[in-house]
Image (cartoon, rainbow, N blue to C red; front, side, top):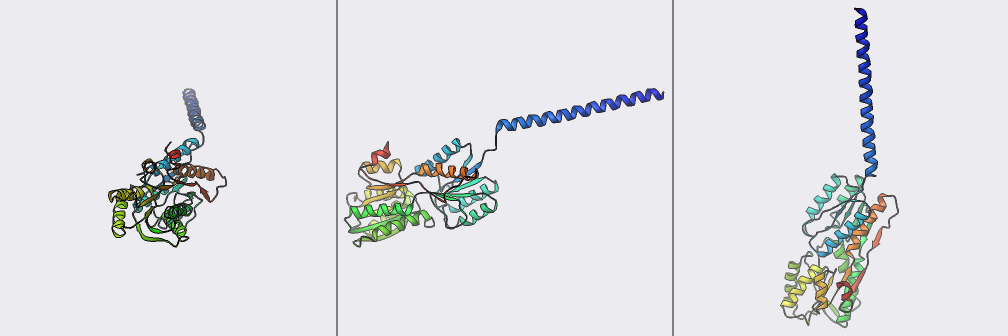
Length: 326
């Protein structure tokens, strides 16, 4: 009887050993499969969030297209989110906060408020998330690189164009965007700097229109009512320039008031071609998105990135507008 019990115990011990080996083999097999799948998938994609001021114009859609192109070329997990309009500062702040909480690898931001965004840049840095500014720089914070236009130079181009058109003498108005944006401050500063070289030019009005077309039309109507002898207006964005143009045309003053804008989109280019708008300062919005994402990828890969990347500007008139319409 004792012999039978011993045989049974030995048999059960053998079964347990075999089962244990099978379990270990299955575990090793699962680990091997997971490792193989990981190798097939390759290294983890860098996650980059691009946060423009809005997506309500050709300009910002071009920024988005540039970012998507760079993301495709560099195997990036890209997120593009924006407030519904440029003046919705708090909505942009919430988007930035959400991307920090999601622990993206890098942030590319076009700040709606250059000063207000600084605490969020600091918060991103504390979370070891590098920040890049696109189109508009921040007033502070640790930003790796600014990718965009030399807006002071762009404003100067517009001012020099006004001086040329008016032969150094006349009355001029200035329509700016959201006052808290460094971009708008720089464009206005460059414009005024150029006008300072022509004492015969008088800046009779300076009003904000928050980069909104309808608001710019209303602002321009008020300016024309107060200054019926106005000779020219510089609007610091295309949408505002188109709004100002509508007001000038409605007042029957296309031949009197020269309209100069900033940024290029199809409608404004066609207005130049038709002789309604005089000119605009074109910037390369596609490159802002493209080079912004590329700079972030380079930085994450340990490469040196310049602290400013100029995407270029050019004055567009009837003489060269066909190049942009192609």
